[in-house]
Length: 381
Image 1 (cartoon, rainbow, N blue to C red):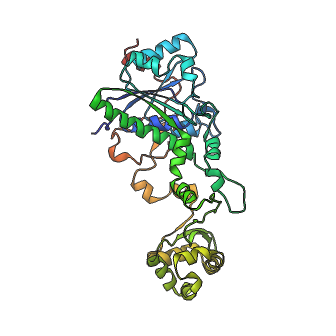
Image 2: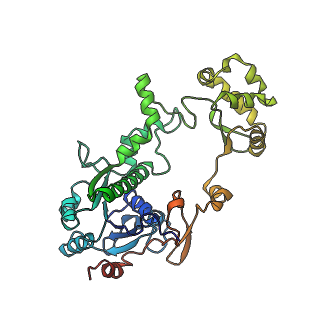
């Protein structure tokens, strides 16, 4: 049974909230021994984000902290700092996501940790990075989505800017950090040298917007909000049927030919306004209402069957309960259950499971659950 590619790697995790815990959860999924440092009596602030709650944990704590052990230490006190540095002597990776400057005040910054573990991979995750004019500004996912331009492009064309429903800035920051840590570990394997990693959530979010940035560079025009539509092609959006909305994507001429070969849509194929992709994009204001008027004559399931038969990409807009019922996810093991405070809870699974540890998932830890265990194992007591 594989213990994962990071088996034997020890990670000291002083992060909280979301980007940092996501990074260290990925490392734990891949086999690393992740020890989560939490403030005694309070813990990670996501224990209080809710309701709902199970025991002392909210959904964010449950969703981003599997495959970890919890040690209660107060980094604001000398004894907590000393114990943290004692643990750091045995760690390969140290991850923090405090506001820049905070870990130096705590006495567990890169220089302090490197003094006890010279080849450490030390990863700092922050909203805007460790340098630059915005470095010390407070940053959470909402702020970074706003500053980074994603909100300005999200929402209905004539509506207000809208944040993404998922914490995409946190997620890009956490995944970027995990990738950087794994790259640094490979480098250390060749050189024996540690490294300091400065990961910015804003940098990650900007990297997500390559299409928008290139489009602005080519046209000089700021992207506007398109709702569920696509600025470069049509039809590519959500449209109403008789009972619910579906999404349809016509991305090339082959798909368009299949679409207008259907008797219900044949008139669109004969209309010169829709003769090629640029024309359809330019004339979407007349084309899309015509398509939707036809779709409104039948329920979504009937149209989806019609489109499936000729290979046109079309899907229902699922609610979360419908997503949880997808056989596709069940078969691929993407909804593993963890146990917390005696309750079984489904969680989002491991897209990287091909290289993940094969042993049972460790459920998220209770606050300080493993303090004595870890201090003994890591040679502090």
